[in-house]
Amino acid sequence: MKDLIKVIDDRYPTWMLSEASQRLLEYPVRFTNSPYGNYQKSRFFGTMMVSNGRWVGPEYDWFVEYLNADVTHDDDLLPGYKVQRTLLNFQSVGLLSEEHTDADEIGPMSVVYMVEGVDGDLIFADHSTESLHRIPFKENRMVIFPSHLHHWGNPPSRGVRLTLGLICVPPEIRNHP
Image 1 (spheres, rainbow, N blue to C red):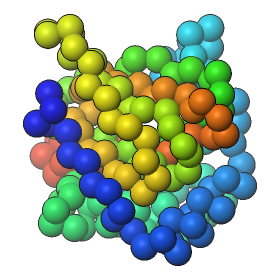
Image 2: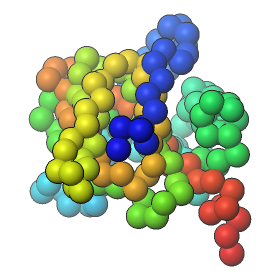
Image 3: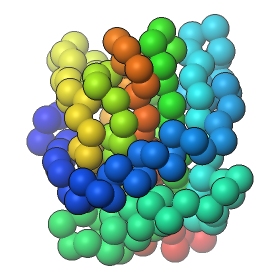
């Protein structure tokens, strides 16, 4: 499973991360994020910013547009893919996520960009080997992985854990009738 996960640190300059963090910490969110809509298992703050490849967020954000374009145009990331969804996730102490997948089929890729926080690991579960793989939270860290992998984000021990989650689809899925 580890070989399917790509971790990129410090992709953007410090000033850009600082600007993005300040803006996104003030972005309108709702207490409605839950991977499968079961609020008894997990619930945290967030909002959909891009859906079906179109901007739907309540306010435009330049950094989200920049991130989406960078991911789908840079040859080292996901060139040729299209951002299907961008979600702002905002967890504070005690707000649990649950194990989930971002897609059932093979093909789509997920990107978790860690914007603000001190901790709150991204955990991957491999049920075939009954093992877990942890990616420690680090500001300005990008994690790219197949969307069908089981994963979740742990809440922070203090403060907030702010991430942007993208689901990107390759051309063969995007152009499927």
